[in-house]
Length: 308
Image (cartoon, rainbow, N blue to C red):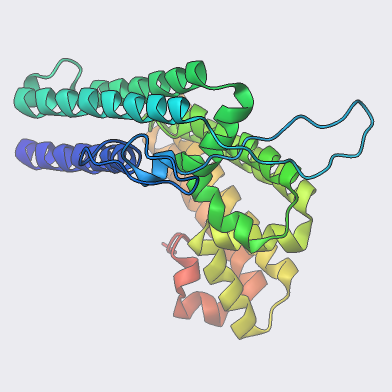
């Protein structure tokens, strides 16, 4: 059993390290050969990091109508500096990973400590980027190159948004990711907080985009919501029914975690509360979709707890 857990932990580490390493490879010196960018600069070594980065010019005075921001390109010196920062941090990550693999069970603090060090390293890299760029340059660079920016690209393509809306949406998502994406606390209390903050952020997105575009945004963000939309079309259900189904899923997740996090409960009390929640959730979904769909099952309902 202990060996199995060690293998699982190693797999998780390798997956995360590979993810971080790929990010660094895409933006760092992986072959030592210069790559020409769109502005014909040959400084640096990776096309992703050295592609022209748009930097907004400041708009007019207070009360002026915001015009589309003109785009500029980072200087060759700054591009080279960013590429070096990424290479340096990639080297540190690989050294840390080797030390963790060599230490095994004897690594101080175990897997959680190692993952927290990786999270700290990611934040330090961001701080170095911030020191090398102006705030506007940093935001544009991260909108194009960060994990958050790349994750949002598909959602931006799904809805019609202005430049300022995109920036606002990026800031909201980045604030959430900075707070939770590299935090490996999976205790029920921490997960409850994460779910609540995520739901609050999504409500802000809904208010900005409106219900129709918000549905497209969610469909691009989450495969489960896309499956719910498909199910609704197949069954001739309304968009409102899809929204209610999504809300039922969110509230099930949050309430389940709250029960797990509630202190002072006996195992019997916790089990009874969970069973009651299962019945309530299944009844709610059945009222939306019909008992036949609930019985047959559907990939959009994989989150739904089974009846006891």
